[in-house]
Image 1 (cartoon, helix red, strand yellow):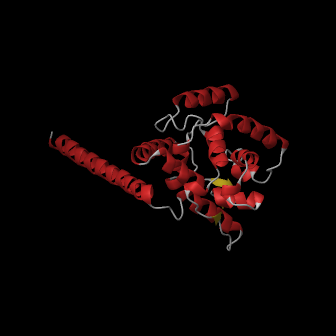
Image 2: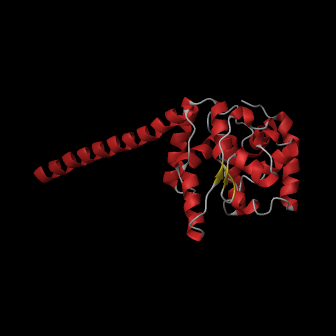
Image 3: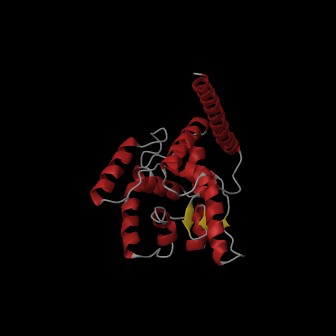
Length: 234
């Protein structure tokens, strides 16, 4: 009996230590979320990952990025990104359950992952802290961070952060860098057509960024352009 009691005692202690470490780890994430409610991130986990990949080919490689406040980003781009990535952004609390269900049905029909259903808040959680690995643990952590973002920040701040850190092409991050890279203008000057063309790159920026004028992307951007007027901005 003594060995059995000792086993359960140490098991409980081990579980308690694990729970404390897990809470401390989540507290670390939460601390950064609170900090970034007011401060602008100088880099993100996703940026570091992409920079490392670029420097494997060129040790002098640098990312193209420049932070701009919400007011200096074209309203057209805000509308285009929401229309393309998360039509219910202003309504949901971090998760679009209908969109997730549709994505699951589409993936089952195709027999492979062709749609994600992630909201802008979920994508921001991934970009700020995580990697692109589609593991159950990463998705679970993404969900927890998404809840933190939605609890701490308003939609305007979430969108501002997203537009400044999202990947828009090989080594291109944020709306300002994207506008200058593709059109030679600032993010504030983007027209509705230009904004729609940028938004259509987001599902696969490293691939689509090399083919910005392809017929597929042109047709897709026209669909986004037609949806933009119906978008509610935060």
